[in-house]
Length: 331
Picture (cartoon, rainbow, N blue to C red):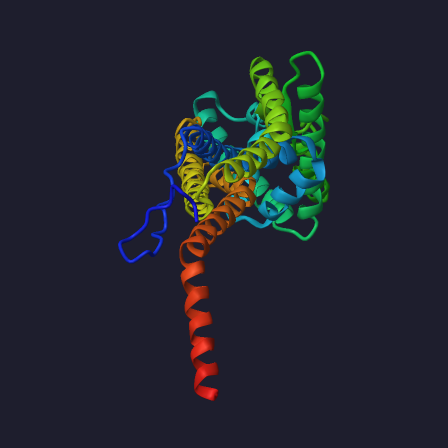
């Protein structure tokens, strides 16, 4: 019997109380908690960086993301509007108006311009809603993404455009079956119609963002994993730490979803009036939906982890007690 053990009057030894945690464990648990918090914040940021890297550097991934837009009504109407404007910009009626009295020329010009525009619009819409448009759409975006990749990885300030020349060429083929259609499109230059996606002065800023995304995609996921693992190893109460880590990851992912929604709204509000809001919104959704899916999966995983850590031990004990009771009843 130890000399330091307390003895009750009856000669029985009273169990000694456990000693309070030493002062060294408190800083260790504090560091573990900080690591868990940092890991919970870095995990959704790493997810966003990885998704952004995929869309910026992988042409196939980008084309797969925007391919469904070929059947989107708002996007189709935006393409019809752009191609029609591009064709009409080269329509000249001066030769036709020479035989018209000068006073009547403005009215005649408006009349003919309206009729030609309606005719061209119908032809363009037939092309855009036809079976061959998805292949043209994918090819146009594949070329644009390769141009973007070259602009972001090489020095210089080359603008990035969406070249709709294949659509114009298909419209030219349809219009060439009659004399008026051939006269309308023959003045359209070989460059066709281009939609500017990235202006030349904005290339350096986007290039810096591109480099930041690549660095984040490379560093953030392993940093988040190391922080979460290190935090769980350092804390004393790991079940409580799991609950906090799961809740933290879910909360950080939810904040990222809110931030993406606010960014989408502000970006659409800042667009020029000439840009179709429904079409731009469809583009934004196509590019961010895979990321939002990952965010919601992260929210679900974090919530499930916290719930299992909170209720798992009690449920396991209740299950063992129920099995023991059934075994006793069987005996």
